Every structure is written in structure tokens, then in C-alpha cells.
Image (spheres, rainbow, N blue to C red):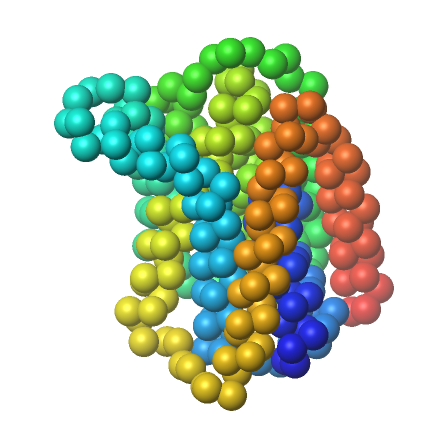
Length: 265
């Protein structure tokens, strides 16, 4: 993988982490198109770097919200901030369970499984179409909603299911305010990303070669900048009910991926 490939994959990760088109699915497609032949450990390090970049871009966009939540929690009162953080913790449970107990099964679904990616992109499209037609409300995410949204997040571990698309769509279909749904979706994933990064680093499965520093740095910067743009754009799109455009995109890419797989067997 050269520096151009690193930048391209960084941009793909940064955009698709927030836009409802599946970052994992597009990274699989991107690696297949670019002919990525990295060793598993090298590929894992690059993936970790890109995820860290997008998590950092989320923190930058929501820095005021995060600081307010920290201040609220430190009051040690059952206030709105502590309730919100508790909902995020609750939403993490399904994905944590799947990640801990079904990690090997999940890993087998990656590694160029383009047919699965195509099928799951069409599922993502269906969710986006439904969410775009939901009426906007002023309702906040409840505790029961948080658990259901968390289940959607766990399902989105499948390559091709958009995490942001699944969680935002689920929240909106549950009758929540669209802007609040997007905010909750983006904030709920930050602890999971850092948890996954810590797990990968501590596992000892990551190897670092100083000669790859330039590629890693280029990918990180590309993913961070693309993430800042995509996160801001996505919030506006959800509020204006413009998700159908991405649904059409997911259908086109999904059908293309399925057709490519079936015609190249």
C-alpha cells in the first residue's frame, strides 16, 4: 500500500464512518479495488489508526457537548447529563457482548466478502428510506430506546450495514427528534471505538514498521479531515430528511457489488 492508497482509504473511512453508507463495507470494497495485499497485522494497524482519526474528529465536532456532559456527571446528581451518559453506556452493551463473544465469527465475514457487503448495503438503503419518511418530533432518546438503538449498533458490526445509518434510522423510527438522534448516534460510538482500539493494542496482534509511518500519517490526516466534514454534513442532512439520496447510493453500490461477485465466480 502506497501513500496514495493510504489517503484514498483514509478519505473513505472518514466519510463513511459518519455518512450512512457503511465504513466497514466501503473499506472492504476499497481494499478489493486497490488490490490491498497487506499482512493481517499491518492491515489491523492501519484500521486502528483510521478509526482513531474518526473518533478524534467526533470529539472535535462535539467538544462542547462532551465538556458539558463531563461537568454534569461530576456534579454527582441524577441530572440530564448523567442520564444521557447512562443511556450511552446502556446502548454499548449489545455491541460489547457481540464483540467479546462472537469476534472470531465476525472476522470471518470480512476479508473481501463482497457479496455480503452488497446485500447488507441494500438492507442499509431500506432503513434509510424508512427513516426519511418518519415525522420529526421533539422527543428525546429514552432508556428503552437506547437499548434498541444499541442492538442496531451491534447488528451494524456486519460489513455493509452502516452504523450511523442503522442507529439514526432506528432512533428516528422510534419517534425521536432527528437532530437528537444524530447526536446520540455519533456520541454513543466514541467509547466503543476507543475500547476497540485499546483491545487491539493490548492484544499484541499489531506490528509497527517505521517505514510505514508516512502512509499511516497520511491515512490519519485524510480520515480526520474527511470525518470533520462528513460529521457536520450528516447532522444537517438528517435534520432536513435527505437520507434517501444515500439510500439510492447504497442500492446502486450494493447491486454493483453483488453483480461483480456473481459474474466473476
